[in-house]
Amino acid sequence: MVSILIAVVALLLPLIFGGYFLDFATEVLIFAIFAMSLDILLGYTGLMSFGHAAFFGVSAYAVIILGADYGVSLWLGFIAGIVTAVIAAAAIGFFCVRVKGIPFLMLTMAFSQLIYSAALKWRDFTGGSDGIGGVSRPNLFSWSLYDSNVMYVVALGFFLATFFALKRLVDSPLGRSFIGIRENEMRMRAMGCPTQQYKLLSFIISGAFAGLAGSLYALFNSFISPDAVHWAMSGDVLLMVTLGGVGSLVGPVLGAAAFLGLKYFISSTTQHWLLIIGIIFIICVLFFPRGIYGAVESLEQKLK
Amino acid sequence: MEAVLTQAFNGLVYSSVLFLLAAGLSLIFGLMNVVNIAHGSFYMLGAFFGLGVVALTGNFWLAVLIAPIIVAAIGVAVETGFIRPLYRRHHLDQVLLTFGFTLVFYDLVETFGGMQIYTLATPGILAGSIHILGNVIPVYHLFLVALGFGVGGSLWWFIDRSRIGAMVRAGVDDSNMAAGVGINVGLLFTSIFAVGAALAGLAGVAAGPELGIYAGMDVEILIPAFIVIVIGGTGSLRGAFGGSLIVGEADTFGKAYLPEMAMFLIYILMIAVLLTRPDGLFGRAKAT
Image 1 (cartoon, rainbow over the protein chains, first blue to last red):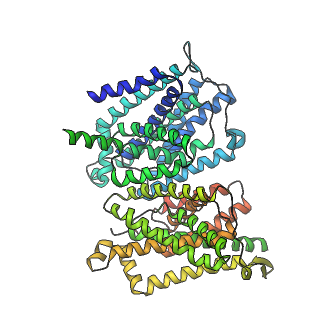
Image 2 (image 1 turned 60 degrees about the horizontal axis):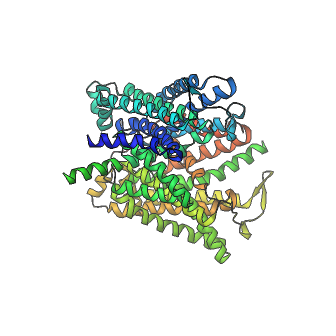
Image 3 (image 1 turned 90 degrees about the vertical axis):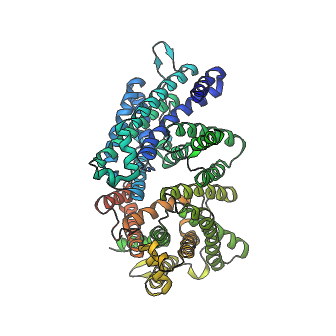
């Protein structure tokens, strides 16, 4: 009950403060969706992907390209983006679920790098390293998304929808199956679970929500460049999920907030962002394997 | 025909560098089940330490000797201090840990070295080129290829013929059983990690005059190196050798004849191999 209260306050705070904090909070919500999507794949199904940015970026590109080159309304583009991400996830996932462990890691990275290379090379279509801009945030009915409050509320709406949808998923029999696959795939297969199909399903669902985050990002940023598909972006979201707490859904949200918060705070005072996040990450892996959320839970246990 | 031969030989040069990295990576993964994402960082560190030694002493050969030793020491520190506590944990935790180290090392190198590209001068006796079969081949290229084969041959002899090599092979097959028959697996692990790191560092210095030295070279070599071990199969020297030949040649010919496709080519190769032979072309699935 207390945690729900804290969450509600935390989510309303940006609206009270406004200004840069509001924009920052919007960005956090977008990446929280991205991180939660990866958590389904990594935390619940046990598949570590180093190429999740592919679906995030592909979706964002779809939104921006449709908007900039074809004049498609960004809301329609929004849906198109998610559809693109789903198709990409289905195609890539089809190949990737055939392998496990390190080959899976490498394969996801390979596909994502393939998309990155395409985004870089295909200048006519994707703008190459310059990226594409020149789209404007659409209106939501009579409200302009350029009003930071409106943008934040839109992001918040999608964030809450994602959170509750994914919570529903992990508590459902399908979600339980994912966890079973993570724990012992062979046993799940022996019990008659179609693990290959389920892994692919997890991949697609995960990709779909990453696409949702990507579409929001396109809306928010009004600009896209190959950086969004680079494996560094995949690494960033992996860091967010791990820092926050793998397999907890709430963890990745905290992780996204912590990661982005640290990034902006540290980057404003020093050049050594990578060094610091690297050290924090090493400490996290060694001493806090369950991330921020796990640490908070342990603290709660100790205080009881 | 001449052009093809030249390209083939250029491919061999790149293959040699890749092999030095892949051999270490493959052994480390085969023996310890550790995916050392920081392997590219060792390569980069070796190159920069080499730069430092040359700046201080002006001697290239000293750099080739000392840099790998420093990197090996760093490797020992990382393995004993950070990776060892994680052996009981899921091997993906080690991926995350070594990934963290990649960030740390990159930042340190960028801090001390900046973003510029450095070159290491080719040492006097290896400068210039010679004519073979109508092709003009830089002597340094011959050196790199010889280095690759030399290291490969030594490693192979060592692993195949020596007692310690037998322990390594035992550890790769079944590390629990190896410990069970009295092999000091902990020492073995640290040693192999150190050797792998040293080889990567050596590659960094040796490739310096050829490929340049800059922050960011860690990632640029790491992905091809991983593609090598995925294609060749982990845990086997043969796999590292075969894989580096394939990737080195494919990448070189790709850049020469299909420049538009070059970026994609090795990825497509890897995808193709992974889907038809998930254990790699020369790999064997581990017992444990």
